[in-house]
Length: 294
Image (spheres, rainbow, N blue to C red):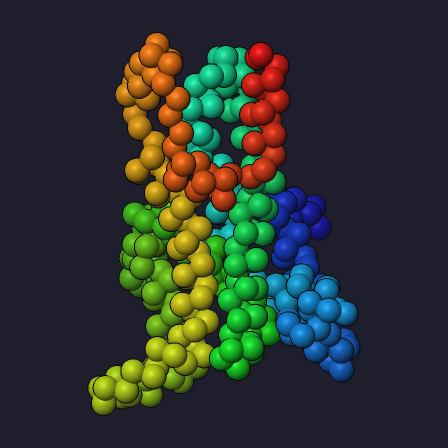
């Protein structure tokens, strides 16, 4: 029992509590199958009289069974790795503001990033969940696609982000093939299509130039999960560091030159992106630091 307890406590907080909720919801739906529909995401009810569906919909992966336990262990492994390595990227902090802070304030801000790792990861999770709910709700009303368990999409989204953050990591697929992790979401999608019996049917339709396969329920689910994941990964890890975060020397030189000549420079586009992805508590912290410095 001690080993089990140690293993559970070693799991990062967000992943641990999400796993517990998945287990609890699966247990509830097993002992009270007549109430299973109460935990599924149905927009008409979730946004009116039964708001708990907004949470339980992300926690229903199936009834309690050995298959559920195995899927939880395998699926949430990527989520655990992502949470363990997650830190709010330093490039998300506005350079024009950070440059005005003292060395002690910069060190304090760096320490806060380490202390708030769990909260920052939860913020990312909430952003992904809200995005998925918007698209799933749109599909429910406009396309008649009923995705009652958006938690499965969330799991795929987090897997995609982890793979994009570690693209060169090698993993064994079925213990036979060594695969770059960047291709893991694609492989999982192909495997699912085969297991669900739609791969050969869709392939035959494509051969006959029937492109309706791209508007199927299966295609929408995976496009939604990976599309949302790519959006948040792109704006958090790619666009800011690659296009709007200059080398420190160039940034300092430009900042000092602007200060000498009294030029005020406003980076509208990157700051709007930062406003979207940077957790709000950092904006409050930076504001307080600027007041204390003044």
